[in-house]
Amino acid sequence: MVKASDGGEGLEMARRHLPDLIVLDLMLPGMNGFDVVDRLQQEEAVAAITILVLTSMDLSATARARLAGKVWRIVEKGSLSSQEYIRLVESAIGTTVTEIAQ
Image 1 (cartoon, rainbow, N blue to C red):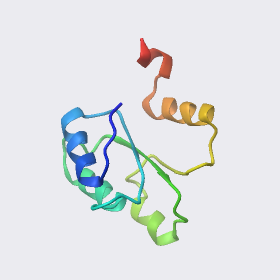
Image 2 (image 1 turned 60 degrees about the vertical axis):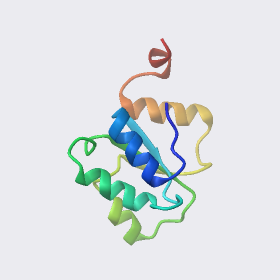
Image 3 (image 1 turned 120 degrees about the vertical axis):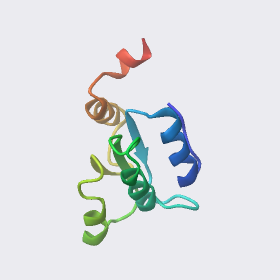
Image 4 (image 1 turned 30 degrees about the vertical axis):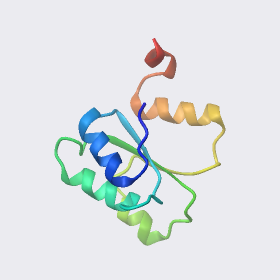
């Protein structure tokens, strides 16, 4: 697992590490999460990476439409327990956290 502090750094890390999953906040310094999603979709090498949006924003219908078909799921921050979050990540990547740790 790697962590980026802003959208630009996140894009660079996605290119470098080619992760199975990106957990993305929409409110980022510099480049916002919407722009990160758009940029990822434009680059063939990273376009297939699964994106889980985890946000505290109350998304409008327009904002949800902008993300539709580009992200795997949108989840409100604080709406999941730790166990539910782990199960969601496992579902997104198709394996268990225990298998990853081994």
